Image (cartoon, rainbow, N blue to C red; front, side, top):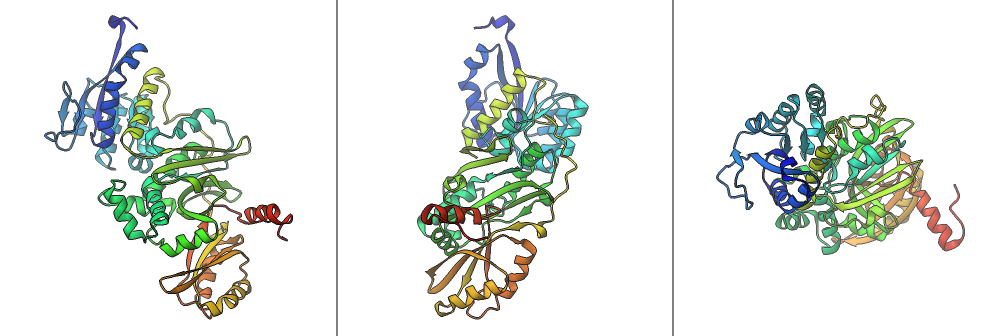
Length: 449
């Protein structure tokens, strides 16, 4: 054990003490002997909360508590600022104020970071310090560390995953309970998996903010969340779940950044994932991130993407990293030269698609023929009965998105189609590869191209 006289005490200021902040206070006490064994001690000395009278359920003795985040950020007595308060205004002001005067920042605030990254970077540059935000991207999955250090010079082509635990729980519950979206949302809220206002989760906004951070570290390109193609899960119905199951797929909210010849594409939307793919096995509040690149082909990371201890633990690990290696930080971190990459035109992307069609049984063959006449190659299809109606689900071959959107209005007018078609993209750029692999496995031959 190091000599107490030589022990370095690092004084922390913290903004927010909710679920994550409270978890961090617990972990600081739990690991104090570990800190001291490595020659330093961590002491929470200043805290800003909205209500100073509220019982936080943790020991805050000896901590100066205020309701003014700027007071903590500007206090000369702190050595490092921890931001777990959330929000896009005061949190940014406080974080940048600390950075400008040389105080490093550890943040779990994905929204503030994703939407104000330029301000944070400039403030860190002025103060000659850095920012760590591992917990903001995927809680306890150490993906930022991997991108910034272990794979710093890899030529990545794809980073994608299931990175919102709330929507993943909702979709899993819809499968298991056989219920509609609204009932699954109520269950998720009752179990504490959503905020009082679940909009950020269910509309895909939370995932888009995380994808901004991941793409920045993976490709060196900053794409604000507002420029990420974003769709949520609110339009997913039980009939979609049933058809996906019949087609040997599951529905997931997938966030993906892909670099191709046309540029960089960032998308968040529901996707059909084949049951043979790793993302299909990610259930409930768990998250998973997949990296693809020519040097290693594919790497997968799995873990809990939210919660008190997973997120608080990621925050603590960032704090310890910055203390042990003062020059190490996520921002700026290892710089990639892809910052001027062009964004791909969404309309020109070529994908496979799932269509949900309400079709009278006697017209199924005619509808399939009509789809072929419209230039859609159907690779797989299935039928289910739901709510007294017959539904046809089809998976198309690769087609340009603009052409598919045009075809939707034409499909709605096909004889026998009794409802506006529903559309969900597939996770795989080319589903035909999966079909051919299965054909070869079972029949010893593949489809003709």
